[in-house]
Amino acid sequence: MNALPNELPDDMERALRALDADATRRAGRVDADAVASRVLARLRQEPAPLPRVLPGRWALSSVPGWMRVTAVAAMVVVVAGSLVLGVFRSGGDRAQAVPVVAVGLDSLNARQLEALLRVTADVRPVATAVEPASGSWDDLSEAQLRAVLQAVQQVQGETL
Amino acid sequence: MGAALVAVADDGELIARYQTGDERAAAELVQRHTAPLARFLAIQGAPDEELDDLVQDAFIKAFRGLASFRGGSAFRTWLLAIGANLLKDRRRQWKKRVVVELTSDVPDRSGDPAAEAEAGWTAERLSEEIGRLTRLQREVFLLRAQQGLDYGEIAQGLGVSEGSARVHFHHAVKRLKERIR
Image (cartoon, rainbow over the protein chains, first blue to last red):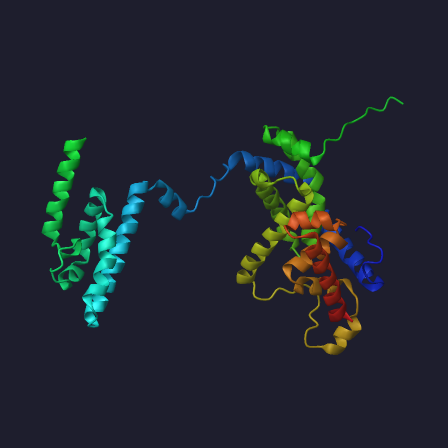
């Protein structure tokens, strides 16, 4: 044991020396050469583990950017739709809720609209709760939205 | 006269040689650090029958993790910290296996104040109380008092500041004094 003068009281130092003597005696039974052989054998046999990558990070990094944007847009629509439904159910003013959805829809491109169609299939109760009136994207039925999408795709196909 | 001068490679050189595939360098590192590592684990109460495996596993972990060893601390300090972590994990497993483990070397004096007072500063009492310190207090205390490392090395090995290492040592000594007086 390494002496550390003045850092430990004498009685503690003595007890620590006794404890360390016991630890040294027990440690002496460990054969360093044998440990070295076994460690080297294990290093040869056991392949090094692959670097740990969190599944979530892997999934996110492998998703194309446009899909991430689409997913976010779809979430905005779903959340906004839920808010609209909540407003209608609570008898609130419809005009307050519609613009929230309209902002999300107006910024979508063809692919995003496609994703939206898939989402609307799941949240149909929300769509049916909104009465067609104002002429915004929100007022279109699923079939109408699909027709718009086809038109957009047609235009895009012609321009490419 | 005529004695051959043998150049002793330092740990950094051995690590570099091992990383280029020189197994003898790894063997040299193991031979060099087995005794201090085993001593460090033994004083923390690692059972005799587990000591060999613990030492081996600590070296395997160290060699596998060399990419993360930045050389800021000494290899030995880093290895001892790995060993202490391993011991902590194994203790959890052993706790699940064995509910009460008392050997004849460490008499149970709990609930007997007279015996406790009489015992004073014995190696057994000290061992028990070291075991009751917080992990950082215990490791700093032993790295300093048993292994004789300076605070800078301890701080780098355990990933704490030097000031924090000093405070942990101070608290460890204070707590041991309070509990054993």
